[in-house]
Every structure is written in structure tokens, then in C-alpha cells.
Length: 59
Length: 460
Image (cartoon, rainbow over the protein chains, first blue to last red):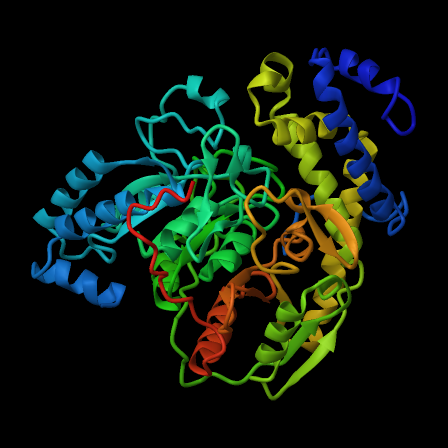
């Protein structure tokens, strides 16, 4: 899977997951992947990988 | 007549439960065009009401009709969760805990309400079962994913409904339909027998048109449940819908920054109106809210996709396309992001704890604007066109991400319904009800009147 997961990497990732979907679905999946990566980017700017992890919510 | 008064007439025998169920079923038929109910349970409801009438004494909700979102187990029926795929599931062998508790209290289930497929959406536009229409403007969305429950309450079909909220799915439809919705603290109410979506984010709770009905129902839904390990062992904390004599005006924090970014003028005005009701009020910032919203967005996709992996592999074509594409994308998110989301959650939790040293209640809008038109794909926020379905939870997602209790309340304003979030520290739902009672007495919040919908209208 490529870094942005939107081009040649997408069929590869689906194949790895053993998921066969119609070609026509790919565009929608790509758009959603882009949305997820957009949010992942925002999220990652706010934390470091050695910050503590909340295992449970427990407000 | 208020719901408690009506319950008293069932107790006294003056008006039997059977008559109440019959009225609710008539209303459900009249307002069929709203598509709030996926299935009306007429025979079961009449049978249940007859049983209540045999011995109504001691039943706190004797005869009160209610509906449950399509993701709660109903004994004898497959739990569809708005899907076509689950039609092949075996019928539930017992009711979900919340449904069972309602029935044990004498409430009568009259229908199963429509929702976004697998609760993944904010609009209740379901590819298999149609869109639920907003009773206040049938060309508009009822919100989602518990839109059927909210619309049924707003239209006056039932006084109370059950829903679920993973990212805002009780709060958004409550706001759009002009009624109350309660998303309690994570773990407060049992999720046993409710079809999951994203395990670390899923909450369940009630809708109602009055604070009294909301409190009455919420009090009876509480309690430990051995069927749900995530449900608290704490004893029920009963809430009062009226101001207690000991009530002291709370310190209020109006959330700014992320929680006002992109809001329409009407939404900003609603917050202003609410703020003016209090003497001790200040503006505060929940730092990290945007990152938390993004983390909740990712976490939902990852957890939801994991749940549906087998169905995505075997029956991708049977999903609602809007849901399928998001779940497939979620399935391809790296595990690293799951850990990062948990780190964001820890930071936001600490930030919220810090804020609650300064204030007792936080207030924020539920949505950036009023209900969008059905079928509308994008909305304008801060001059940018963004997808409706994915973004109506901008202000709700950071709060449910850390499990805080929220009471969504309808603001008394002309025009389409607009809602606010009253947010308390964990386990302080009683505080929410007291502040809501104060605002209700001050005439600042209250359900929109039941709209005069043309009976039998198809709205097509």
C-alpha cells in the first residue's frame, strides 16, 4: 500500500484483506481514505508517539 | 395532559393502557409519511397494553407508548440495525436490557424506528428503508443516526424513544427535531442487546419532549447489568426534572474556538440567549477539541470496520453504499492510528478535567446549523463546502470521545429547531437536569410544539 493509499496501493490493500469489490466502488473508497488521512494528519499533529495512552474512557 | 397524569389515569383505570396504545398506533399510521418507524408492532403493542391493564398498579410507566431504535434487540425479531444484511440474522432470543426495563416498568413498545445503516451517519437517509423526514419541515433531515426515534417523539406519536449515540446520534436528531435527548456518561446505561458500532464510543439513551419524561425514563433505565461488562456497577443516581430548593446557580463555561467555528448566526444567537440566563458565565476553550474530533472520526472508522470485516468481504454489495465505502476505507487504516487516537483521548480527558475545576457546566451548540435538506450532500462551513453526512458531528464528537454526559436541549427561538449541549463531568447527570430545569423555568429551552402535519401526507 502506498503512503496515501489512494492509487495503485488500494487494490493491493483490498487484496491483502481478501476483499473483492467492484471497480465502481473504488472511487468512493478512495474519497473516504483521503478523508481519513486528512483527519489522521490533524490528530497526529497533537500527540507524540510516547504520550500516554488512554485504554478506557472512564470519565 | 402530561405523561405522568396520563400514567395516573392508567393506574386508576379511567383511561386504559389499551386506549393509549391505540392512539399511538393511529398517530403512527397518520404520520407514516415521515418514515420514522421501520416497523409498527400493532398486535404486540395491543397485547402488551392489555396485560398492563390487568394490573397497572406499581408500574411507573404504566401504558406509556415508546419506540426503540432498530439496533435494540426485540425478542422474536432479527435486529437489523438499518441493514439488509442482518435480515438473515436469527431472531433475538431476549429483549435488549433497556427495552426490557421499559417493558418491566409498564411501557408499551409500539414500533421499531428508522436509522442510518449500522448507525454510521447523521442524517437517517437509509438506502434500504428510506429517509426519515423532519416533522418540523418534511423536506429536511430528522438528523441521525437515531432520526426515527427523534421524529416519532417530535411528531407526538410517542412521549419517549430509545436511541444510541456513538458520535452524536442522539444529540444531532434531538437538536434537529426540537426535543430533548440524553447521552449519559459512558458506561452509565447498559448496552446489552444493542447492536454495536464502535465499542469504545457507543452510548445509549432516551429522547423526550419534556424534561419530566426524560428524567422519568432515565431513572428507570439505570442500574448495573451483568449482561454488559462496560456498564457501571454504581447504584442508580436518580435525577429530578424540577428545580430543587437547594439549587445554586452553577458556574457556566461557554465553549469557544472549535465549538463556534463555522456556526450560523442563528446558532451563535442561541448560545448568546442561553448564556444571558446565567449570572456566573465565562467563555472557555477546550484545547485539543479539533484533534479529538479527528481522532473520534478515525477511531469510529477503525472500530466499525473491524466489526463488519466479514460482511465487507462477503456481501459488500448489500451495504448502503455510503456506509460501505467508509467502512472499507476504515479497514485500511494503520493500527498506529488507533494508538494515536487513544493518546489524543487521554490528553482531552485531562483538559476537560482542568476545565471542570473552573466551571460546573460547559455549553456548546449541537450542530453548526439547522437541519439540512434531505439529499443535500454538502454544507457550507466557514466558506468551505464539506460533506453533510460526515460533518454534522463537528461539535458532538469531541465530547462523546471522552464519555462525558450531555443533555441536548432545544432552544426557544423562532425558525427551525436548534439545540445546545449541556455538558457535565462524568457521572454528574443530576447536574445536567438541574441546569436544564433552571433554563426551562427561565423560558430559554423547551420542545418545539408538535407540528400540525397534514395527516396521511406522503411527503414524497
